[in-house]
Image (cartoon, rainbow, N blue to C red; front, side, top):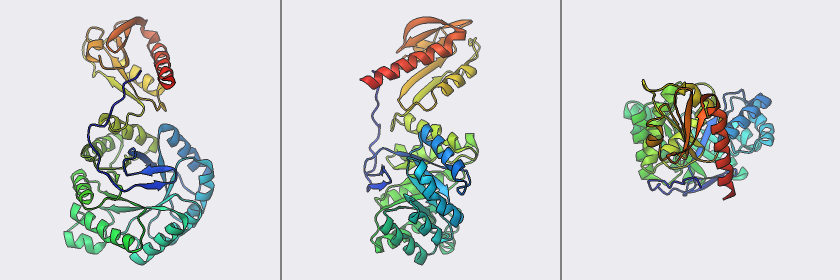
Length: 363
């Protein structure tokens, strides 16, 4: 039976909302989100990407809604997908109304570019259609008077903007909201979320905006999102990567696994290699990672370049390979199972892993 882990920290209890078929907040599992980079008006391309994201583990997806045609396309997209769909709307409140009418499960608005009277109209439509609204405060588009008051996009400015707009939602008697206070500056983002978490009980969506290309986005997100999650703050997350959104999902689950918050998907541990390594460990790791892509069950897999120390250093792994020149050993929980030829590393290890996962599902 595979090892199951419990979260190491107690999460802040927030109000719970239901976005489509997904519960957010109130003790529900931290939800992994992403956003398509397709033209929403191209229904076929957008559906295809959402299906790929879903297979990778995405649980909520957001699409850009730049015009009426995109807002109307939501109806067709919804027919072909199985995860909640959020419409990302800026400037023109009427696009939010059309998106809701066409079946969007949620609307993301930025109070910095939609005025209060228009937001009230969006809220009233949300009441009619049962839509969730994400109030997305962003350092790049704060209300001008708030930015002037604080001398820029400080954590305090982000929080004041959020609180101002929360008051508007509460005046309208609308509780189905989640909050995000994003910044491309990690310390600002962390402090803003800490401050708002102390002031409200609404569910929080975590993210570092404009985080950059893959390596920068991974580092910034691991720090910003990871620190907050470890403090018990956060109900949904998105790792923002410049490029293919499919790259975001494994990083998001990697953050959650590293903190033992959600043990979803295989965890691969591999040594950094040294002069004792006599196999192509980089290629082996890549092939195993690709072979396990899309697996939802947790399993710790060790790939070690040294037969001498491999099993000992990775004794807590469920399964692993320690390579030597031309051959290596397969081990489970630090115990040697059998010797394997180097050319058989990948098929043998993947076959063993699939057997273990199958048995785990039967338990």
